Length: 356
Image (tube, rainbow, N blue to C red; front, side, top):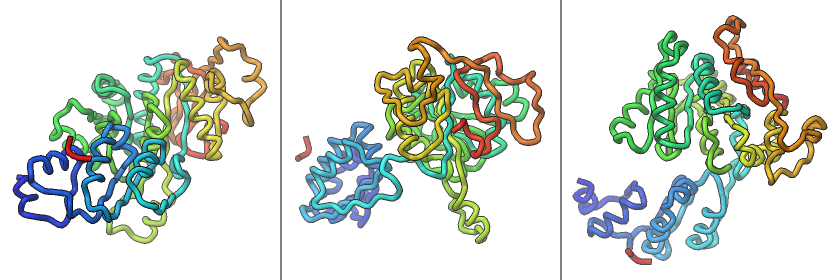
């Protein structure tokens, strides 16, 4: 069907790089008359290994074609492709390059085990669900299924009737679409996702992002965090609603363990550049990284710590307004290296070619 449509002719074609190359090879279409090329989420395409395909397409369009490249980050890979394929490009930055959205408050939670991360996520979901939709990012397909299953079976989540689903590369596309549609309609309290399955994900009114596993790099972290705090695109909003949405704030939690000291340091440097507060437990973990440079914000207590010393304190479980402070269902038995915010209020953060 796609082949027939392309052979019939069109003015605009939206495609993945690989499928477009397939269509050209099958003679369904050609690129010699293409005058405009738009590369959306260029950094994500390059991170996923589509660099060669993108370069092949750009080499085979009209020599005078106009190319527009959109990217949430501008790392080395994007800069290389831009330098190779663009002719005296005009670069427009919206906000700071490589910086997370200023409308999303960020919290780093340093936990002492994988089990503690699961417990934290399970106990937090009912609280997060009272605020809005939640996306939980994991590193692998196996983790995606296991965490979603664990969340669905948790007593508090079951008692509140909260629905949880997951999307990853091993699920059939129709199943992923159904899960995503349910999430957009508000039928799911949380969606557990891998980075690949969540590419291009644009869901309005996501209040919270939980990085269950840390991102591979800062660019990927920026992409994840950017899923929160997006304004609703409903056309029938009144002026007051639009004004409120424009200042909406999302929240992102990144769950780290002792082995994640290097990424903790990466986040520390990013937070300092962006003027974000840094919690003591975050600073303590980052200071164990071989790349740690110290600097402003280091506390004397941290600087005096021995390399193998662990600062372990009990978790203060976040409590939603109007709920009981009883500790019977809290996870205080799962200690971690620092206290979390006592509420979800963003003001109550941790202290601070050719076709080959």
